[in-house]
Length: 225
Image (cartoon, rainbow, N blue to C red; front, top):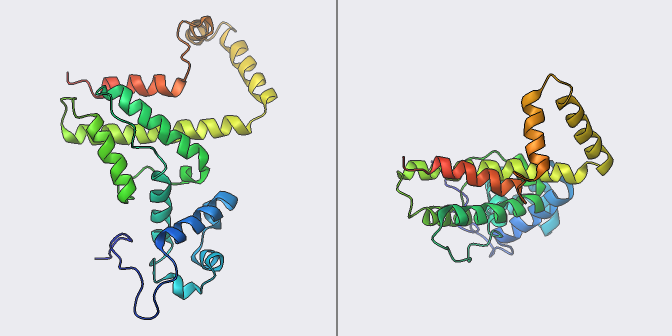
């Protein structure tokens, strides 16, 4: 069985390694920040670190290991030192918001599918924190793991929307909103028109749509009934 990058021993026979896996992750993240995931290759990482490509294989077995290191490194930027309040939905919402901010900071993260198997030490810490937040909830463990998967999916989708909104011009967003309202009120979409009227009245206009949607989903999913 092929060991994960976390189980590999640093370096092989020969001179002591001059770099660490953290160095490899940092170099790869710089490349991804500049050119997205396609810019990340073992050859370019080696060039950035000033070593031969063969020397890089002292730390990783290939590009997949590099991707694992990258994901785990940025997962470490999600603050897990914030004390839990004992209110599962509040605690999970706060955690998800911090995770979304990291995804917005590193847009290339959105190219990774939501998958439980790409788990390194920091990602496991994230999972443990989320499960600890759900300790008061009386639902089976597998349901709690499913709740984390839903949370991560919403984090990705709303981060993608936030990044997209930032890239779209204000003029285009206004034009799209006007078209939506015009179409909704053409007489053929009464339910959409009613929903927009409620939204525009402020009766159901959350300050943060992400938090509102996440709360509703988690409340329904974690209900013991």
